[in-house]
Image (spheres, protein in one colour):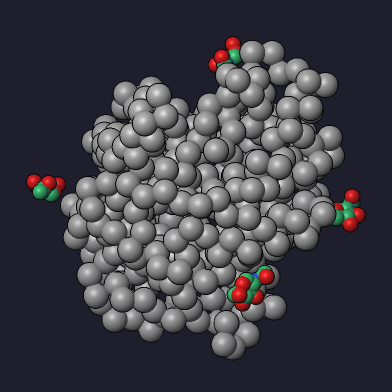
Length: 380
Ligand SMILES: *[C@@H]1O[C@H](CO)[C@@H](O)[C@H](O)[C@H]1NC(C)=O
Ligand SMILES: *[C@@H]1O[C@H](CO)[C@@H](O)[C@H](O)[C@H]1NC(C)=O
Ligand SMILES: *[C@@H]1O[C@H](CO)[C@@H](O)[C@H](O)[C@H]1NC(C)=O
Ligand SMILES: *[C@@H]1O[C@H](CO)[C@@H](O)[C@H](O)[C@H]1NC(C)=O
Ligand SMILES: [Cu+2]
């Protein structure tokens, strides 16, 4: 039996990764979630029935291919948003359109974490219901690969990767607004050009750019970035950006910030202090186009693994004090409070445009029983 188990584990993942300090915090936190759920039962959603979202490197090769095939399938289905966005050519593009239209509302605001939770969950549902995917949304535990992201199972360019680095194309680095020197530019990595390996090597990016981090991305025919602008997927997988995503940064983010305002502020980055935050660090570990574009970033398929990890980190933070943190929001209704607006509340509405209606923020707070019981997942 033991031999069989070992064999099974051997087949399960190409390489096994030791638990990092954040993974260990999850193990230590699950009893608190269990206790909370005993006090506040969530109907059919229990720790036994909950979906397990897994880390990319813990999936088998077949599971990783099933995922990327489902993403390619979404890219082959006709768009629902082409009336408002002539550049949108696929169901995959629909998600980019919705992100673009709501970018100022859903970043640096009350809605950042709840809205992206809804967004990632809805994408996972589309992969399952429209493309026959049987698994769940994987996440990218940044710290595992931060020392050498280009050789990670995400970016090594193999058939089981999320696509390789871009071909070498020199650029001047990634400018970070408002940051003081030397934090105002992330030095470039060894890519910058088109992705030529792995499942997304032949992918076409159709819409954007809006706020490209590279200076040579061809302009969109429309001012709103929603016109048709076909070009290759570009990346500059970048260990300089990844340096702020090692496990100690994530652990410190979760354990040192006791209210949602500071948790979210440190996560999203404090640029005037030269601190990029894990959210920025993860986005620019991929870099290129569209991953380096604040508005269009969901157009790089890795976005979804990055934001699953953002959601996971929030989930871990919430578990440290569930009674309080499942009901805690802060900030205002506008990005960095510009233009000035009122504080958001749990009764504010958040939605996915043509993809899904508005719901109260309150419905998006818990992965265990949120959205009328439709959210029922944990991360393992
Ligand atoms: C790459 O994409 C183009 C345009 O969609 C298509 O014509 C071509 O067959 C694709 N090549 C491969 C190898 O998939
Ligand atoms: C994480 O570790 C690195 C390398 O030891 C160190 O430079 C950095 O300051 C640490 N970050 C935090 C938030 O402790
Ligand atoms: C808005 O929230 C901040 C903290 O996030 C708080 O200091 C302030 O008093 C709140 N404003 C109102 C009008 O409730
Ligand atoms: C629980 O019930 C809800 C509402 O009927 C349903 O949407 C959800 O899929 C169920 N969840 C599980 C884990 O069975
Ligand atoms: Cu976003």
